[in-house]
Image (cartoon, rainbow, N blue to C red; front, side):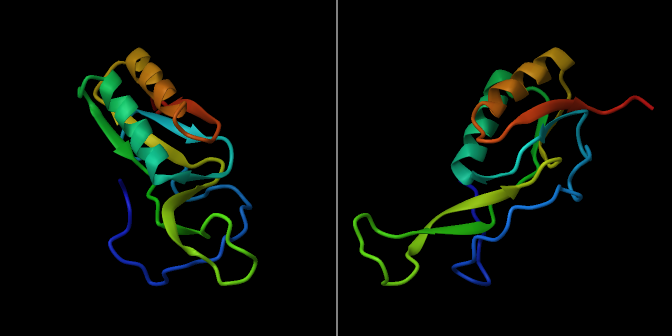
Length: 137
């Protein structure tokens, strides 16, 4: 699964989930993409499951780019632990996704295959998405 090699801070604050994505909101690599419509944390497990579903459907034809990376550590306290006693230990990593962010890009396959592959991948994610394609100009 995806995770950073090293961290500046082992535990970080949860933060506010506001605004829309400005960076990473347009297709850069491929012809087709999966764009986020909602805001959420997407875990490394969800990203990997979506990537595997996409590559399985296209039968390793074409190319797939994952445009998000889980770099935010999330902590979790032990079950049935009382109040107090600190923040809890590191549990998993998430990617913060805002509306407008491109999650996956594809190229080298037909539009119908890309649409179906990205639909299958979108079911693995916990955020609403839409299929987009590069405008021919």
